[in-house]
Length: 379
Ligand SMILES: Cc1cc2nc3c(=O)[nH]c(=O)nc-3n(C[C@H](O)[C@H](O)[C@H](O)COP(=O)(O)O)c2cc1C
Image (cartoon, rainbow, N blue to C red):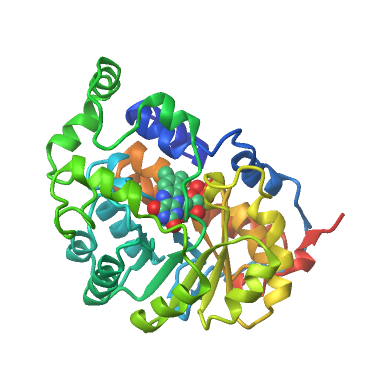
């Protein structure tokens, strides 16, 4: 098979390797998927200024995110069920990110646990927290993240209730999985994926299973989880979590200037301009279209990151020019992982880095820390 040259190549390869229900779980947005599409499409409307006869030697993509040195300002976003794109997916992606020199964020709803990922990495990773009604469990998750030496907590704010993705319902994606003829067929036609899954014991939500009283098997786990997202989550809870965590805190899911203002008052270190990859409020604007307004509103009171629709190094550059200190990628690394495991996540990062470097140079800059709005054509 030819080497992947673009994120789209990796997506095509993942589609052939990952069973349909799990591929679709990644490649879907809520309801009409309008916001999901806009996240990608709106990047294409932003045009770059081509500059010539500028010294392009000695370029650098090195930067910092939350004070941590990064090989380029791109982090892996927290994604649930990553270990279903590829056996032991979270552990492999975390290793690829560590070797490349970018942050990896582990989701609360991961297959591999905090401890699993800690056991195969040397540097600290970031942990994403969903606030469950069971605050005792939330406290224990925070303690486990501290014990694993996680260096930032990413608190997700935009999932108090679940958006609906039609594909997941139509595919019958559920926990516990239903083993109907359709599902067995989907898996049987993906033998390499099946072999991987047979070779690991990690098939369930290992941050939760065995850590909550009365939740042991998959069936009790699914009813517990469905009931646990807290619709009453408030700004006061953010303070409660900030105090318990005591380390670097990132607020994820800010898409509105007023919420951005409130976020600055929490004492959090960073916010992520995000609509959850178009998986929650369909009809919301794309992340990239809201970034500049939010970055202007908060100034340097809080570090600003963004995610949603980044599919190339060019997209990363555009987001940085519009005020992001760093970006997160979700689906791009999931496609890499589904396509080729750890090697595919490394390919994702290499593709993005190369595109970012070349684009920066052709726009006449040598240091990623020097990019700005003056590199864009403003309509
Ligand atoms: C399959 C999938 C699962 C996700 N699960 C989570 C999650 O568990 N926690 C969370 O905060 N965000 C989750 N997200 C949202 C991502 O963190 C991120 O906001 C989004 O993927 C960015 O958009 P992109 O996929 O276009 O890069 C998920 C996204 C995808 C695609």
